[in-house]
Length: 308
Length: 272
Ligand SMILES: Cc1cc2nc3c(=O)[nH]c(=O)nc-3n(C[C@H](O)[C@H](O)[C@H](O)COP(=O)(O)O)c2cc1C
Ligand code: FES
Image 1 (cartoon, rainbow over the protein chains, first blue to last red):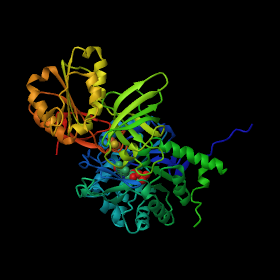
Image 2 (cartoon, chains in turn orange, purple):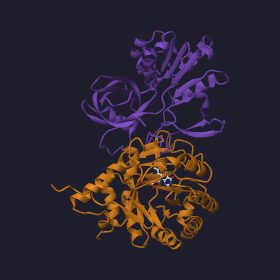
Image 3 (tube, rainbow over the protein chains, first blue to last red):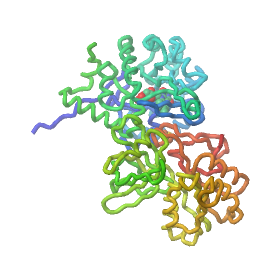
Image 4 (cartoon, rainbow over the protein chains, first blue to last red):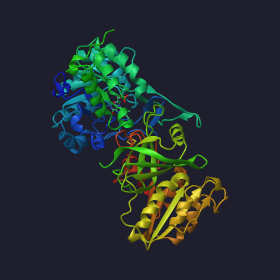
């Protein structure tokens, strides 16, 4: 009897080599340990950790989240333990696993971005940096970094100068022309791009006539944003040659495959983890099944096969 | 981590009081025995709106060789709980749990005093059940102050009465038991207790816990309270369920109700 061979799932994002194209999205998987009881972390392509800043951040006052139809708003405000505590307390745990560890970084000033990048570069067990130039929650920075092509390029160059690790720049969808930003950061040396971050949104409480979120606005994520994310990935893959990571509303393997067919080399899963803690595993298995059913031996054979 | 995702089969889902339901769910025997104060994230499989799970504290729990039964006492407050309330026998739900820290019941003192408001009676009922089964608590005196808005909003009292004799029922409008807020009635009795010989537990609406914090301010009473907050993940990953507390150094910090709680020391909580 012929034994069924499992399809080849490894993908290369430039220098960053992954066992499979499925990663967790920053801020939705904690520091990995929160889901270790549900998911075999060895089976993930990569773990992208919660956004790290130079100093610990308190975050925004509650309420911070609100479910909306097909999505959720969050205004966590980048609460995190800070880069030093991450390296000391969380990284040793993550080092045990096969999954690549990608540190998502965030700063309020150019200098902070540089310092965080430098600290992580000399830490053992970080495989790449993902630069969040797009978080819409924090009033001081966030949006302005990611919405101006010049500033986005400057940050990219500064982080590149501080690190030998592959640098992924994560783009915000809250812009008029995402491809222009993508081109600017590619030119500035980005090794890969990831998109999209959350879309800024609101929700009103009819009883109190006040916002559901204390922060008033929040970032929309979940299935509601997938069509927007697909459109933006499509706009970007045509204009850049660096690898693109697709993010936004991926709940199932079918959703992930849409991004891969469009040309994303990998995907990140965010809000789906909250609904189904095993979502990442289900997507990996679902992609394998799709490939097997369609007699495709290698995942790379399907990436970018979209026909407009 | 011991929590996991289980398929639950609904045995019963009954409206026991206006907008208050008791759901009994049967699940696999591998479901871990919950600590009182722990909760589950419950979700209707395949439902898209709402798609996030809802946190519900465990009201009662039992098991036999073949299965476990989790009992949930919940109030209809929004879309999610409204759909839950419509589920009929044999429907399936997804259950993630048991989650959270639960009450600390390591050392229990001579007096066990419990203050509840409304649906807050649910996690405290499980606590009472547990303490009643424990030999080292058999000599402790248990005193319960269950508070409700009015007689027509009373829930879970029959179970309490089976477990405990010393119950001071309070209603805001005086339609049953003592008239007044449960915190006021408790305050009148406070001289009966000393911090050294009393273990204090509470759960209820924010305003009630806030009032209790005021009463206990500048006293030496320790009080464990179970909090509620909107949640997305329930497992500590999203930091969406924040509550402001004083950390070990006394500085303000946001803790996760789902993973660092839902039980906190009342004195640590920073009220707005
Ligand atoms: C609660 C929450 C926290 C997030 N925190 C971060 C973060 O720290 N850094 C970041 O780059 N993106 C963050 N994101 C954005 C996600 O990584 C992702 O880009 C977005 O949620 C869209 O994907 P999804 O629809 O699969 O959730 C966060 C999203 C959520 C829902
Ligand atoms: S609900 Fe996600 S951290 Fe508590």
